[in-house]
Amino acid sequence: MKTLQEQYNQIKNGGGRKDLFLKEAKSTYPNLISNITSFKDAENILKNKSIINEELGGVVTLQPLVKLTSEDFNPNKQAWENKFEAFLAEEKLIIIVSYNLDTAENEGLQKLKVLSEKAQAKGYTVIGLSASGETAIANINATYDLNFEFYLCDEKALKTVVRSNPGVLELNQGTVQQKVHWNDIDNLDL
Image (cartoon, rainbow, N blue to C red):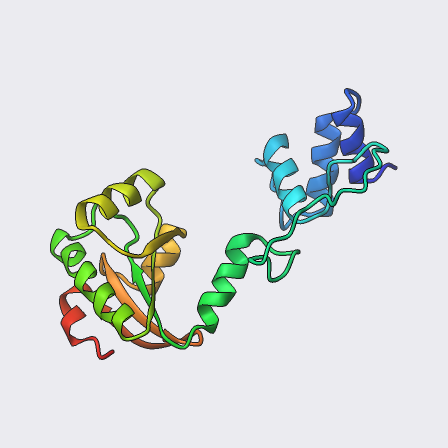
C-alpha cells in the first residue's frame, strides 16, 4: 500500500488515481476529509496540514526555499497567525467587529472614526474584524475615512463575539475588559 504522499506524487506526475487517493485520505483523516470533499479541496487541506507536499524532484539549490522576514516570528505559522498572537499580547487593544459591513448601521460606522482616533491617542492599537470582502472594506474605509486595518474572519464567529453591527471590544493581553454595542461607544472607558 502506497502512502498518501506517494499516491499524490503519482497523480502529479500524470499517473495514479484521484478516487483512490480520496478514499485513502477519507479513511486516514476522517476529521479533515469528508465524503463530499473534492480532490482539489482535499489536496489543499492536506497541504495546509503538512500531510502532503509538492515534491522538489531532486532539484538542488543553495537558496532558501522560504525567505523569512522580520515579521516572521515563527516560520511554521502563517502570517495571520503571527499577527493574531501579537494582537492578543497587546495590553491596549480595541477590536471593532462588523460581521457584515454592507448591513452595518451607518450611525455606528460614523462613530468608529472618532473612537479609533481617541483610542490611538491614548496608546491603543485599533483593528477591525469583518467577514466582508476586500471591496466592502475598501468602500467603508473610503466612505468613513477609517484609520485602522480590517482583518477577515468568519461571520458566525464574529456574531458569537458581538451581535451589534458594529460592536467594540477592549482587550488587555487577550482578556476582554469591555464590550459595547455601537450605541454605547461613548460609554467606553479608555
